[in-house]
Length: 351
Image 1: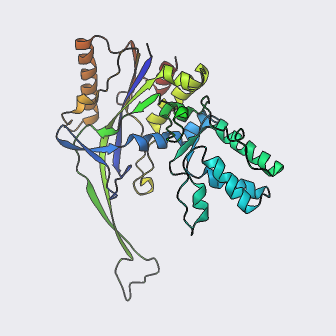
Image 2 (image 1 turned 180 degrees about the horizontal axis):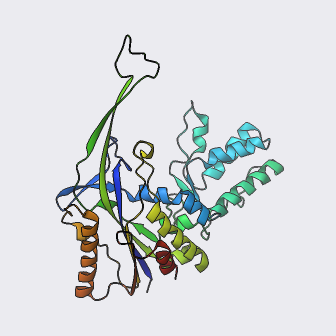
Image 3 (image 1 turned 45 degrees about the horizontal axis):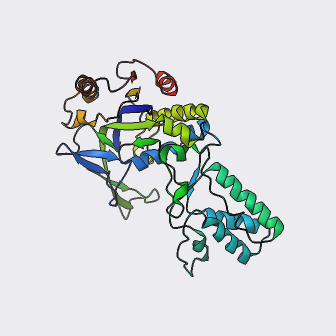
């Protein structure tokens, strides 16, 4: 049986636009017949894995997600004296190991060195790529089939191990994600509002023109979000080659990032940085379940956080009553009443 770690977080954000849709408005979802604010799991995962916190805790074990590796290889080959034509040809061969090349644009010849789909490169794969660059620039010969054996089934890229990897052209090297992240939604219904603003030209004396130099509009909303994560600890350990110590470091980093790191959308305009006010961690081998049903009926009242905590814990206890214990052990951090600590949660999750 797999060991599952489940995290339930309540985080309040003031007016913000952390994750916007194609029209620039905060993302939303309808739940319980009411409109809620939403932050997508993709936005959250990117914010966590690219954070300084994550990089510091897991230095050397974080991969790179890009379409541009072929361009980087081309630049490296040119920097080592390889002729432009050969550098482009060899770089394209290396890039195509990880994905199908983009269609050529005659006006932008370097585009043919990009791949169509974002690829996640492990540190080991990046190291092999640039070792090959050194070899090619030294030998002045095209890469052989053996040289291009760059993909790794076994590696220690923690972000790939956690969030998975899909290579359409090389499915044998796909990685099943060990961490499932739900879209964060507000526990209450919301109305997205408009911020109409103007900017004044500092050199405008007002003698001839008193008008604004710029007029703009930004949508925003505020809310208390519920976020759910489910971690298959055994899958995580397997994905990084059985390294349990690294898995423990990764879990601690993920917990801390989820509690402290927010998406960066419009942060300069809203300064909407927040830390989690409530975090419930559960561990066990039973089938995981989200507690989002606690907020199917929107939370209302002046003390939304306290009510939300009460509703979440009530659903947790009710699930235990009707299904039997849904977790073997639990740890809680509650900043509302100053109970528990983030370090307690990290120690619990790592154990």
